[in-house]
Structure formats: C-alpha cells, structure tokens
Image (cartoon, rainbow, N blue to C red; front, side, top):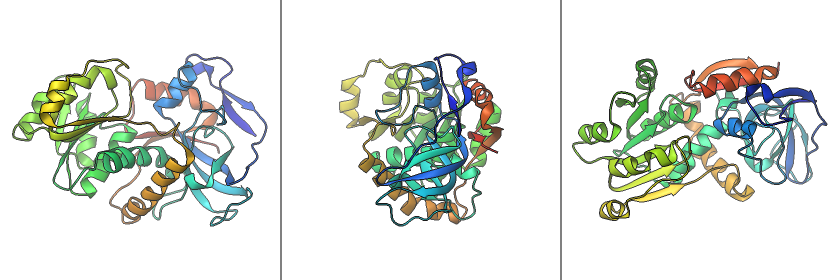
Length: 326
C-alpha cells in the first residue's frame, strides 16, 4: 500500500507519498481500506517533529478516517467485511489502509457520505468528551468557542445549539464569523479587533461564559479565567498560543471555577472506546436527523497532503480539509 511518510521532520514538503508494508490487524482490531482522512493540527505538529505517535501506533499521520472494513482481526464481533465506517485513530489515517481497534469504529451516520464521514471522528469525540463529558455543558448555559470556524469549532457550535446552549465564538475575519453564524453561533467576536473578555461579559449581562473550549493554551489562560462565569469550566484542548502561562488562583477560587486539559491521542483504548460509544449514542442520532453535519472546506488527493497542511497552517479554511485516496 501507499502512505504519507515523514522521512525527516520539516515543512509541508516533508510529507512523502511512498510505498510501505500493509498493516495486519491483531486481536480486537480491524483493517480498514481508507477512503478519506482529514488534516488536524496534531498532524502538523507530528510533521514538524513535535508530536510523536504513542508507543505501538502507526508512524504515519492521520487521526481519523473513513472507509470500508477489509478484514477482521481475532476476537472482533459486531462488524463485517464491507461495512462502511469512520474511525478515531492514534495515527495512520494518511494511508490506503489502516488498522483500528474495534472500540474506535463508528458506522457512517445516516445522511452523511462516506468521504465526508472522515471529517467527524476526531472533532466529534474531542467536543463531546471535553464540552459534555468533562465540562457538563447544560441547556441555557453559554459556551465560548475559540477558533469557531475550525473543524472543532464548527462542530462545537452545532452540538451546543442542539442541546439548547447559547454559543459565542471568536474568529479572525468577518467571513469566518458569518459562517459561524450560519451554523448557529449567537455571539460573534473578531479577536483581531475586539476583546473577547469584554464582549462575552457584555453579551451575558456581566456573567461570563459557563464553559470555554480553548485551543490556544498559555496565551489565553489568564483572559479565559477572567471570562468565566461563577462555577465556569475552562477546557483546554490545544496549545497554539504556547504551553506555559500564569494562572490567577485567587480569581479561580472566587469563581469556584475549574480548568481541565485533555487530548485524545494518548488515552488508553478503554477510555477512547467509552468516548466513541457515547458519541454513537448521543451524536449519531443528531447527524441522522440533520441537526448536526460535518463541515468540509475542501477535498484534496491524499498524495497532495502537503497542500492540505499549508491550507490549515495558514488558517485558510472553514471546517475540515479532507485527503481522499481516490
């Protein structure tokens, strides 16, 4: 088979489409013939040499995919060869075939095409686990999403609205904010021109956001705490703005607030399976009913993964950039 390899860390040109050995499913795993994968910022970090795969995972980038089951490993039940699926991966999605633990498989949702289903697993599992399973967003509360036009952001908007929450977003252009509004965002904040702390306070009558989904990390830490409501919850899922920041414990105590930080890739298989099962139970019916949909900016041939990385690094997209095998 062929896969996108990274012979040496570097820029987008470091991604090389090359022939590699076929993977073989082990106990509790399935082999999936990949139709599409998606570009995530974690893939960019891996390409740059900053985010190696967990031990035992595929060395190739790609944290999600869609495709068809080609082979069942020992001990797998409930799936059959030929089933159309999408999957959460620890790596290996940028390839023609990938091995997946059965607990990280999802059926392609009703009403979603097989290719576009590749835009779902990583973002849905990230949003559901952080916003709902950890931060417990409730109907009537306010969610602030940084990077509202990203893959994560576009899904967070839709899921929060589907459960009856109010949604605020930050984005860097008028056009991106307009796309967020089309998905249901109520409060639109241009982070280049407006102070999100002041804007969220004004929009909530001084209360602040009940939950903040943050992809920036250190750069926004202090301001995020300022923007939280009493009993607010800050969920950090990225570090685009750095890894070390100061936390005002006094403000946090005064607000009886909480800060959590979580990633999916390195979690134990059992935890990933629990998240995937929750997503199938709670989110897949919303997709089937048309209340939530994947947002795809563009599809590129997988050998052109370098171009996909350039687009995402430049933030020149809304939603997901997909890499298609054929």
